Image (tube, rainbow, N blue to C red; front, side, top):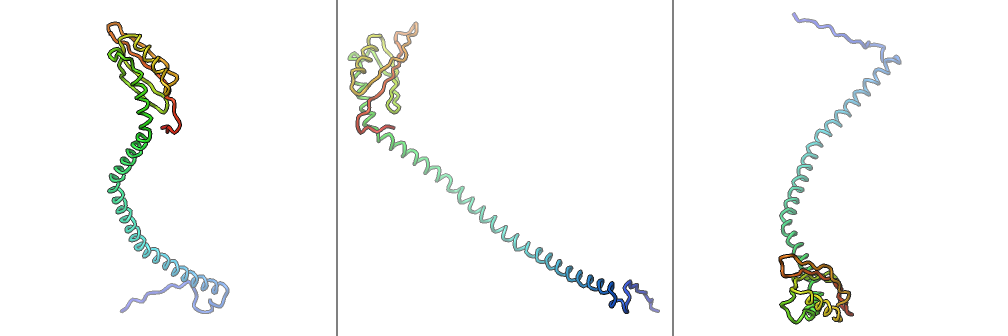
Length: 190
């Protein structure tokens, strides 16, 4: 004995397709079937394209990491190159004005008092055309003579005494001077 199963069909079999409602329902079922197939195709294409896009993304990440490691390996070389380039630029600037600096130092040397034990320079700072000197002296007369000698120099102008200090128990006087070095034709400024 086989069990007979009843089937329930809400759409009548005969004559229903000829009615307006039957045609609309038949069209809707057919259209929804096509829409469902197209949607499934789109989902399948998206699913399979994900594998392609993931592999492409992985390749691009590997390329980026490889290029990053190459750049990092050259970072030390680049830093050394920049350091050497900066040193060369500084050397070029210093050697370009070496004659000017020699003339400045020679003018200062010749302006020192004859009795060298009375006055000593501790610091010489040259910036562009201005010069700042610091020194020590055992007498005011030696400082005064040094200033007079600097003022008579043709390459130095506007000599000014900035500071003179004498500590109680110290036999030496500290002094500082500022002056301007007169540039000659052809001198190069820093």
